[in-house]
Amino acid sequence: MAKLIVIGFCVVLLAAAAMSISPSSIDLPSGYWSLEQSRPIIEKTQTIRLAPDVSQLTAGERRAVDQLLEVGAIFQRLYELQRHSQALSAFQSLTQLDRQSGSSAATQNLLALYRLNQGPIATTLDNKRAPFLPVDPVTPGKNMYGPGTTKQLIESYLAAHPEDRDSIMNARTLVRRINPINLRQDEETLRKYPVLDTLHPGFRRKLEALLAASGTPVRAHADAKADRFQRATQSIGFYGVPYSIAYADDLIKAHSLLNDAADALQSDDEEFAGYLRNRSRDLLSNDYESGDAAWVTGHFKHLNAQIGSYETYDDELFGVKTFFAFSLLSTRQQETTALRQAMKGMQALEDSLPYDHHKRIREDIPVGVYDVMADFGQARGGNTATILPNESLLARRYGRTILLRANIMREPNIFEGTQRTWEAAIVADQKSDLTADGNFYRTLWHEVGHYLGVDRTRDGRDLDDALQDDANTLEEMKADLVSLFVAEALLRQGYYTPEQIRSVYASGILRVLQNNKPRRDQPYNTMQLMQWNYFLEHGLLSFEAGRLRIHYDKYHDVVGRMLRQTLAVQYDGARSGAEAFIDQYAKWDDNLHGVVAQNIRAQQRYRFRLFKYAALGE
Image 1 (cartoon, one colour):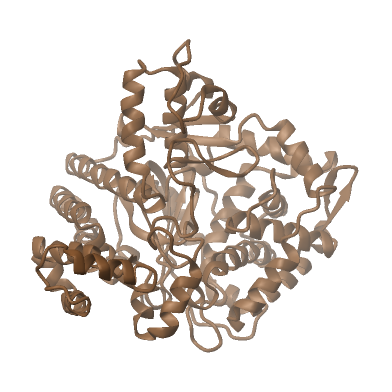
Image 2 (cartoon, one colour):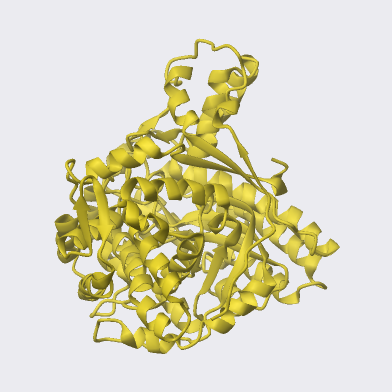
């Protein structure tokens, strides 16, 4: 098999307590966490600085990097706004308070918490979510459906207005209440940017029709009649606004920067420049097909970038709204070439999966090994790997691309932390089974797992549409299980050695361990708990004196059984079936899970990781 050697990055581990740089504390206004409240989280935070070698970049590529980092900063702002309506104003107030306090320990900690959580809502040590700045509590769906909006309100509206479903449930629309203020705001955006009016034919007519229905002249200013209409409709009417219109100022600026970056590297990397130009248009049209086609099929040189809104993990209301993310990546060309050569015979692996409705797939999955130069938005926070695009139609047309972030996946300080977790949970004679190689390959094949298996229900619906907020939980679990199920076939092919497959299997168990009871709105943690319970129930794991033992002889069979059930639930497409499956296995027992979690917490030096990037001057 091809050996992957990942070297050449610089990581600096900073003591988390160093973020508390002032020797004294101050009294903060109401709503701001005190130094005593913030310190426990800060002390459990590991700061890692990524500084990959980029000496191979040309002068044109370096100029493009500057433009692309500006786009990343725009996406970071948008992501924070998508997650909380008061995020940006709260951050501005916090920075002013920090200056006024002379950068006290208390305000410096709060700034670190904001960076760590990408907004004003902290995840606490007991896995609760709480505001640490004076803002409203977090709500399901974040800032994507408007204040006070519930699932029942939207479902009731859609039942009466099914013609609006596609717009309101679109992956890249912001849902607004129907009222004159919102309608005029969007109409003024179209007047300000005629290109958006051209790219979204019919949207102006819809706005005008809704304004006319209010009895308000299209170009009138707010008046008493408009106010009465707003009060009358604020709880019953909704419409979807394309992101390109809802966030027009920022995305128009991003469009310009992406084209500047494309111009800078046109002579050095024509295909990457073409992708950037296509993606710049996508941001205005709200249709990603041209950019995704150029991205997945392109052959780039030294740089790659994930640009756009793809993942729905932050939408706990319906699980359909995508959130902005940006990753700027430097290619490890030699390792990428070796990995692509090694990944052959994908159709045979698809056909081996335990379900009856196999699909034809593209054999040449574009996979790359990269170093992260900088991450923004939903991609920030130690993301190890990605497979995109998610839209099944585009994936069938063009395939998907896999991005492996080597300088995170192989980072020794991170692995040291995972090793502590492993050793706290596993019986002594199996502690040496886990290696960094196992984590690397399991992660790789997890991403391939998204490409294999069920991608549409029996009646032809996309999984996100059919299963809504349960779709991510089941899809991530499917990918986990596929990565473990195909390991036996890869061993027979000579891709894995016996030592490597054992490490991959060990990594699969590390994956399911939890240090706190998961919340149901955490798709990753929920599906990990489900696997943990299923493995215990079917004898792959046993609980011995507060530790877990792996029964490797049962591994392939048990994983295959759970994978079969997961694929069946996805293919059936019934939310009731998905809920029942999740409810059956997402159970927490303090006398078992709680004991292991306590052992893990007792050994963990860090619970959170804050990433900084040399490319940003950090």
